[in-house]
Length: 73
Image (cartoon, rainbow, N blue to C red; front, side, top):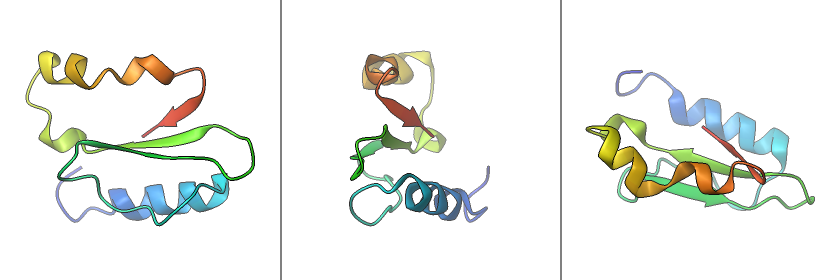
């Protein structure tokens, strides 16, 4: 979605429901931020896909590496 559409607000609610560590903020400067579960559930990976320019960028951050242990948004 466009800037200001509420993507981070959505992920904050998801993170709250998943009981992850720390405040969920926009990963604008680091592309992807991992929030660890506090209850032994899956971790939450919050990605700023808005900044990805092509498939090579997507491969570089290797999002599929932890798909078995995390939820990626």
